[in-house]
Amino acid sequence: MADLVLSIFTSLDGYFVKRGGVFAPPPWSEEVEREWSLAAMKRARHLLYGRVNFLFNKGFWEPAATDPTSVAAGIAYAGQMNALPKTVVSTTLQGDPGWNARLAGPDLAAEVAALKRDVAGGDIFAFGGGGLADSLIRRDLVDELWLMITPHLLGDGERFFRDGRPEAAMALIEARPLDVGSVILRYRRMRQA
Image (cartoon, rainbow, N blue to C red; front, top):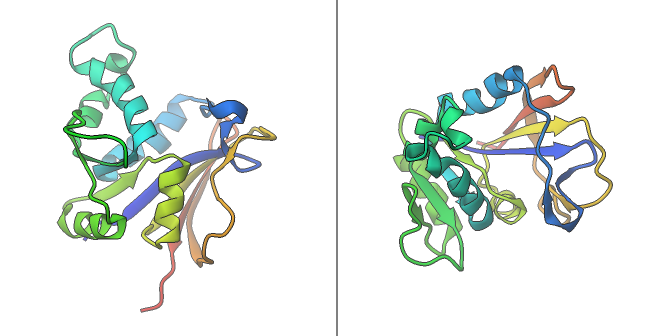
């Protein structure tokens, strides 16, 4: 049975998007690529996206398959990103979303349960934005939080953890400082048997 890993980076003060909805990328290095991106690619067998993040990533990665001059074409794991099956949680997208993806049905808990049951040989990585992340956390569907805390104070924007979610006990399974000043924190959801 696969785990659902919610992977996201946030600033020290908890924002993952700057004021005005501006993307706030983390500082990058070879170590960050190895410990964050490549580590995720080793485990991921299915990707779960919200609509906005799906369209952003599709626009970035998909050209690597046909345009050798694209930025993504120079990234070693572009082929894997394009090949991995994907599920998109959206109430507005219709039809075939492309990029080896399908649209989720209306019952998010049932979708995740089916993915956990059906995905073999690795895990499901959720790269959603705040809406999808909040929906997954509120429904207690996340098995592991994989956070990269960046060395920035953004002061405003969209917070990753929203108010009003249920309480959840987490166990720290890894804390890894990176050469750019970020820290990767991995927490496992503790559930009563």
